[in-house]
Length: 296
Image (cartoon, rainbow, N blue to C red):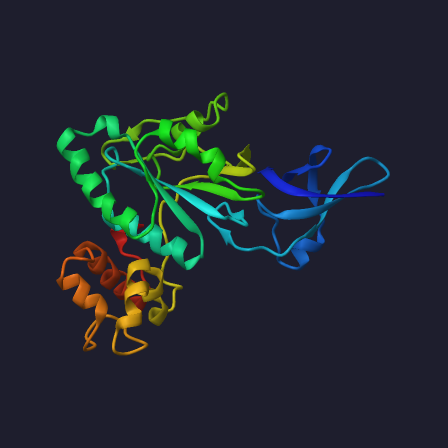
């Protein structure tokens, strides 16, 4: 029997396509994974075995850095978060939820604003003013696919897996078409009555880009933040974490504590009110253990 190592680049109907040094091998997973309640995911580094009949099996999964999304992508290094200017409308609340979620998962994020050409000059100016704050606190922002396309291959370093994320209809598949010409990912019109799109990506797949991979995934329609420990939430707002070293109390939650640096910066206009409001709203969500109905 022969063995090889590789990375799972696609999953469809129970088959795993594994990219190895000698090419892509289509495999099935051994039953032992079901017994261990493990399920291989796209992005997993794995070991495969080819039996005497030429049938390939996935026999071992290497330890993961993380596993995010449904369907899941493993070992994600960076998220390219697609936020639409319009259709669906730009949502600060949704942006903060995504950033909190990925901060919790210890994944870096870059932001791409899609559909800028469909927004009015006034709408676009307002959004750019908002996103300038996010650039200031450390999130790279791209406003055109041309700029992103020119830079992304150099940004994805060896063995890194980047994944697209964003609500349905935000334009992830359209962006992927630009980044990887010839893929012709299906795109779909937005439901104007729901102000959101339908999922056009049906499976997770990795595409070689730069020195690593870019994953196309179905859109996140809801993000569950309730598993986050309430006292840890403050650490997932990057500017809060940075400011908290100057709070009077080490465990300051930035709510009613005296001499809170976050509250001081908020009052001084150096922290956006919307960021703080979303922090308070997510605290309430975690406390009650329920995702608000309008976010489901």
